[in-house]
Image (tube, rainbow, N blue to C red; front, side):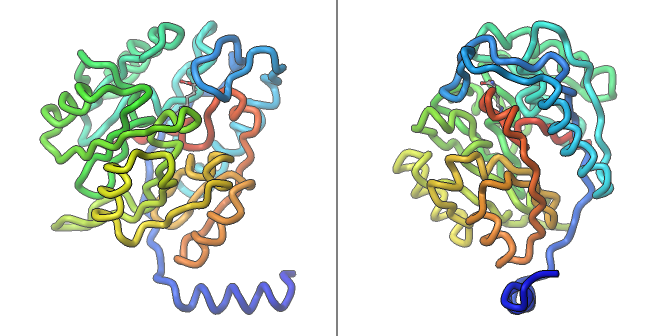
Length: 294
Ligand code: ARG
């Protein structure tokens, strides 16, 4: 039973917040059977720190089970020995309307993942566009209503943003990341209501960490998303934004307590899933989740 104070607060906030509508999602995940940290390609990875693969699998399973219990469809790609980062399926590509823009990884340790994911997309009925430019899929590209938000600065290049624009014919808004801890867009920005409504343009709700972006990008975000949730540095630093939303349920790290409260105030339903083991590789909830849009 919640304390009376909490119950009252909950009633007040939920009464003033809009009702959020859950949308069905189709995800691709990869069981972290070969997860470890054996190299360093982001500031979170420290090969000297021990990793516990069984624990990573248990934590990952909690996320998988939650998606299924929420009614989502979760597909699996077989993990490949020697590719410990394959659990971060968000980097495997970017998919809209049945077309998959394949990934071309920045670092050689992950390069073989690109073709492995493209094979899976082909085998599962997606049209595959092989990338010429370096890009790390949904780690850096997020669909926000009608516009694709695209990160650059560390992994995906400006040239990949052009390639993406030509391929999908949609507006691509380039955003520059400047803090090495937030090296993929999905570590600094989260789309809460990513799907466009029937018959028209919809402005998506997003949350982001302003300091992860350069001045120009901060200005752009403020102009285009005036109602966005801006999270605190503390919540950003625990990968609070590396979250997955179905429009109503938002899966976040239990450490992001401020973000959790901001979500509740706006009528979302936060679910807390701890992926501490996968954070040792510099990834969280969103990194382990690729959306398959048909
Ligand atoms: N170790 C992986 C890398 O540095 C982590 C990827 C996290 N993925 C993400 N979508 N942010 O590439």
